[in-house]
Length: 296
Image (tube, rainbow, N blue to C red; front, side, top):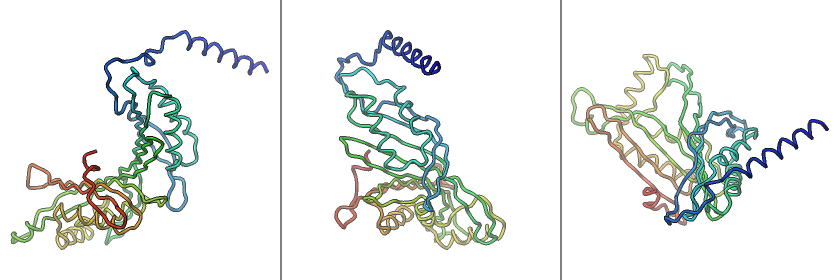
């Protein structure tokens, strides 16, 4: 009872202090400009994500949380973003439903100032990798992220990842007597799963990775280097080829309603990079270009 009384007194004291302090963010603003996104970036956070086999996989994440700010208000209370996030620090596993609930909580804490909220959770996702010939085991950390947007009570959830692979220039191979030049390809894919279907990272990563001239590996012996070099040479692809092959693979998997692809070849014989973008969405039973998505 003594402890409870002490805690109650402390809470009353804190509330009285809060009431005595001015809250500048509540003041009105006369400039008439809505802020599209305001919030916090790169909040370090630990959480568990769900693996395809049902396991809970711990990851260390960087979290961005934003809201839109109505033009009549001066500002938002930044501490409330982190406050809402910390409510989830002991959750067993963070799902897309959990992300939606978190964004609802953020909007509730902000009140009438906002009409939509946004979160991006960035993390390293580790997967085992086996060399193609020596079968040496290693591990790769892939950059991945989840994005949630809650606007006008409509929730959109997307998954993103960046994959490295190697590519070999078909033109160089065709015109050269002794070989051809290759480059590292950096492929970024963001997709919105279809309906209640899930697209597991364990499936998405190898699907993208296999579309280059050859996969790359953390650990290679000489027999593996021979395989990778020859495989890349035989499977030469332009940046356009890689983008289209990823697009075709995503369109054929029956789990996606919209996606954006960026393929960047970090050229080995040019000062510039070669880049291709593709954005498509499912309209009925047909895939069509999604120009609006590329502009966002």
